[in-house]
Image (cartoon, rainbow, N blue to C red):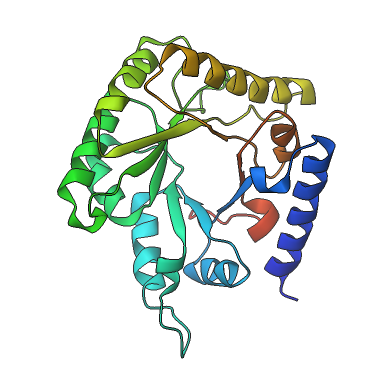
Length: 249
């Protein structure tokens, strides 16, 4: 068994355990494999182990990987690995990179402004590869005081404006909310962050009847069990699957 296969087995066991503790079906929680900084070969192996949803944080980095994945089919395979997986943008996305983002990604999970939403909508409309399909997006919410965290504050005017505008952007499919919990804080504070995102989702559903926001993307390698306990429908696991990341100097 490869290292990745061994890691995946452990992660799946932990997810199943967390779901049982929360009295939730395993099928309610989607696993996103965070492959940023790891080579395209890691995605190929992960796909062959049954993983089909990935997260990447840089447009240019994944553009290179995407090209590599498009020609990485094994002998005798009729489909490329790229056609078998979905890869979402999970890093900060500048609006001037919207066109390139919709060329290489299958979704954007870090939508944080009206300007970016409008740019993405126009980019999808102009890109024939989308063929009339909508781009799945999540609205990123900031629930931590850490300056390094991105996203919209729950009570911000920008969030209200974005949620009002989204139903009219016909090429975007707003599916839910995403957040990152603060690091190195007591467990109850982490869990409270996840609880607040769930409560906010429910509040926003009441306030914006034209939107349907079932998705809660929250929880990573170190805290996904707490996120599952608080209603996560998608967890983002990187280090626990692929090992420590190696960043360029």
